[in-house]
Image 1 (cartoon, rainbow, N blue to C red):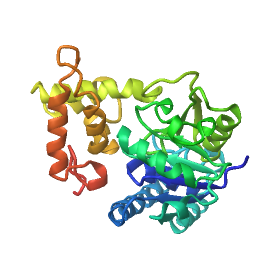
Image 2: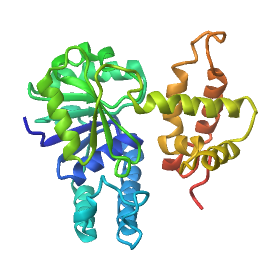
Image 3: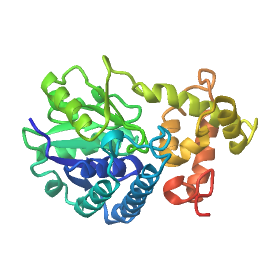
Length: 316
């Protein structure tokens, strides 16, 4: 089966990036959104992604552009890179990417549905129940959940044999990885189609051999971010100093709070909130305090890079 039409359910930080990257690579892409308000929030993200691609291409088209810290493999290969061709692909992606509120219209003739909703189990379950009766027999469905297992939702999809996980890293055009994880009902044919699709949108397919909450990347990243948040809410140090400590001590390009700004504070809050019900004597971190602190930032409109302000101000 060849993937042609792709539908991304959810226009959040990563959902918008996935959709744009697939469109950049020539796929017919629609983002399904739940409300007119969602369109108002999603379109500025798409505008910003377009600018990020064009800015990245401009940096790639410089003498130092082939440096691995500059060159974005999600955009082009080093040996065949042509800046003008890449810019044309960005403009085509921006022009052809569609936003749709009508679920039935969005998924008509879809080959692949990528669920990129918020990290809320009930919301995801409701989404699968609503979309299942609308899908054609051929349609494969994947979840981009950061922490939840596909086996938690397989029975609600109406196609457990064609359902698995496809997880991307943020700034997909630069961090071009795609973690692919099946559940016990996933058939090999569907799995192989998703592996090929990941490669076709210029990702490096990373195949997991068993289900694991957090996959590979977030199994390492999430505890790291929890440790940083815990240092903050316990008053050990401030976010900027914690970031500086990590960057200077390891040579990493970003500290944990800069990463949270990119991921988005809402996503961080949703993940932290899943752990707040753990009895305090069992919890390795102060999750309730972390959730409260993040919620205060969110209520103040400090959502991260997408809002222009989070732990850092990006409006300067």
